[in-house]
Length: 374
Image (cartoon, rainbow, N blue to C red; front, side, top):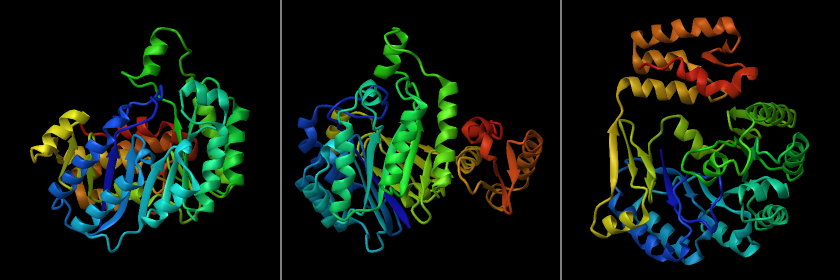
């Protein structure tokens, strides 16, 4: 099985913290969709197995009108094997969601929505420069359910200056009351070349409080665990049986095709990524060429990636996988580093290998880096 990710590189408004590729020139959507349809055809032989998941991400895919979505889906059905499609996700901003739109999405086969709520708190939304309101977030969830899409995921951003501990708990309480099956929680990060980074550098707004972020993370984990959510990946929580299939397949190393500017693809031996420039993407596609860079994945890089991903997952590292995929030298290296961490209490053994302890999950990326082969 394989997956398809489609990057829709347009947003109505630029969020201060975002470093994903996007443009606010939404009048170019028609031209972009025409090029995307050509890329769908050009890349039809990249994957050799049936498609299990599709993910429309961005940017803001909910900006597309129904004719755009119809054209994209017709082209996908024409050029790819979608007979075994299990999960079809569309990312949507609350201000784009209506009952009519959601019913149309459902008729297209879209069976999961990822809603970018980020917070229900007015001050936090204003600080992030979000385009929607608290009322629109609540209404968006109600509209999705009324239209019959109950497989919902909502994004929250924690650790912002105007989000208190009590505000965060209120956000989680609202999601609990709506019985949202999947919640993604991200610590606000300050990325270079973003408006947020520039504002902080100019001291126009305060910097991020990392101690507050760690405290928020602990509150999220404790609250959602008590409500029966699995903390199956560092940033992701789900009710049993409601994990994101598309993202889980990424983490398992299952091949996927990325379409659109800046989208990444992976076939098991190499990774490639499209140019992050809308005009150059469109120009190249018009000439019949997909504009991408590519790298072959060597053994050390594959091992490092496996460790980084696995230590972010509830299931953790499987020693059998390391021996099978990477051999005895990597196995011994893993055991050497593991021994040091077992003494610190940050890692614990499992039936198949090891995982990061509950109290150290906020440090997962740093712990993983100690295993890297350089």
